[in-house]
Image 1: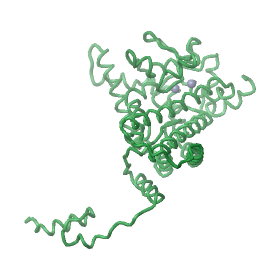
Image 2: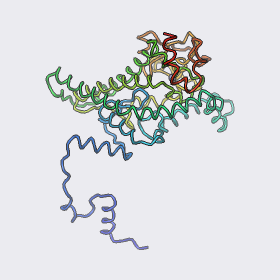
Image 3: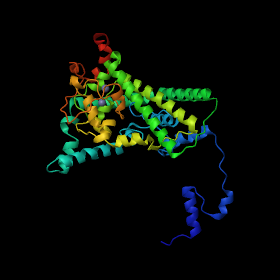
Image 4: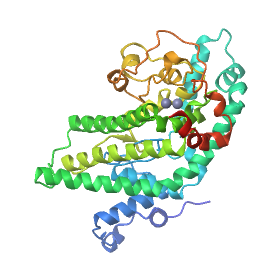
Length: 387
Ligand SMILES: [Zn+2]
Ligand SMILES: [Zn+2]
């Protein structure tokens, strides 16, 4: 079939992509109307709803709580898109911990460990090692799957109030910064150094929120009743991360939204934009943390980061210790990323070598948390008895 003349190809290209291709049409191209900030935000939301997730230095999704709710303004908008996202999108939404990229990266790490430790590695052996039936079909894991679905629906319902809280705190913080300084903005230049500082500051805000809400869950008796749901897992799989009571979920999410909204407002006050570096909508350091073993924190795979990194960044093995039913390990390793939180509150436990761990609540209370109903209602019933 003969190729059409060049001008026809240009017209076809213009019609398809909506871009200019012919010299004569240039003068007729309407000039885009200036749009206000509100319209810009609306366009951003629409783009995200359509799956065209915008990447920019100012696009920040602070990952908090269950890892789904952002707290800078852009993050809030991202969280809002969850409302319209089908459940299945959890594996493809960039801001999700369950994104297939993170799952694949963690599976690769587990596979490499198998390859190094197995005498005669094989594909079948690798699959058996990474996805052992005895764990993934365990009664405790089956409950995790049910909780995962229920909590996801609850989170979708919780998103509007969390968005409202985040927006309110962001605006209040912004107002207070301006009131205290007497200027609308510090107008700092966004230099590479400040980009790094802002990115780390936003990460610290999120990490602090996760540590302090977790610390409160362990140390405040009434909150511990609900946190037992998470610790009642007898086996750990990546689904166990969402084995949390709704009260646990709300506390963690609200704390995260609050702190990262304040950090986001501080950045906007200082630089007019939030210069946090993001990848797929996540703080770049959080993104790296998710890639490098995050899902192995709830697994049968023991991973301890080496040397200095292992002492200052929470290895997956530290969270396995956190789930131990051994009294030596009670209330240890509550930090998510940086171990200095635990060091400061004397709750750090750095294992010298691999330890055999029995997972559970301990305290002789494991049999109280065996059914799906126990996971959601035992905390309320146990209140009066154990406080
Ligand atoms: Zn805990
Ligand atoms: Zn856990």
